Image 1: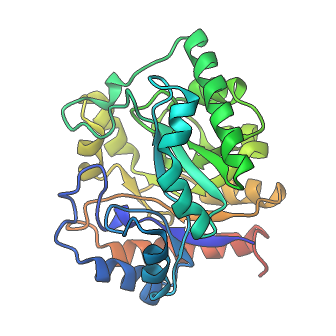
Image 2: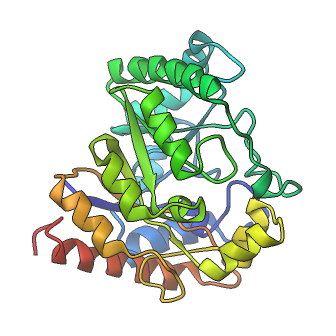
Image 3: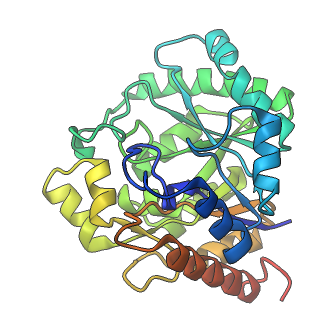
Length: 300
């Protein structure tokens, strides 16, 4: 069943918690659940760590817990140590009935450092990517044995950003490792979202509907801005925003043709003082629901 969700970073950023710090948690949940009508919401630093408390909090606003970012550090620690480290997060996912664990390697990532240009991201050699992929696949196999599928998030400022890196990563991992396809990170990372999604659709287990303002993304590259500076400048936006360049109709058609069954999440961080989250998230959800009907992803 297709469900539509959002991420609290539209209201209160996780990488730079000063962004949206003045927005009450209750407002985030009320707007996302009661006013806009999302089915669920991903993790954020405002939510309680206790799995039961989390379920009760979100449920009070008509929301379910979709999943949440987990930072792997497999470049610097063993699979066994990663399995031990993931236990509190895994308990949260299992208590809330989550189907996927969103994961991204962050041991050498630069996306959360406002002083480092996103252009200066880490790069792995072919041998390093193969070794990393083998460890991640083992970690993913463990998660699968616990009933949760790993959904790897290719992301700006990390070792899996460009189309070639996505291809290499997918080749280095196996069937236990699923892909979180993010349209905005794909476009910002130099890829054509339609081409990349079609190439890896058989491994896609989670979908982030993030849009990109191409002029801002180009400025981030040209001026060597950090990822956070790009966010504040407005690099990302929601589906349906005419300032964005990502075409979502062909992407949802690919999902529909492949029989995709899972979450479609608007994960589009902006400065909430500049771009009202209630207005933008409402636009994004209305756009996605219309396109989902038109492409046959959901019944019309």
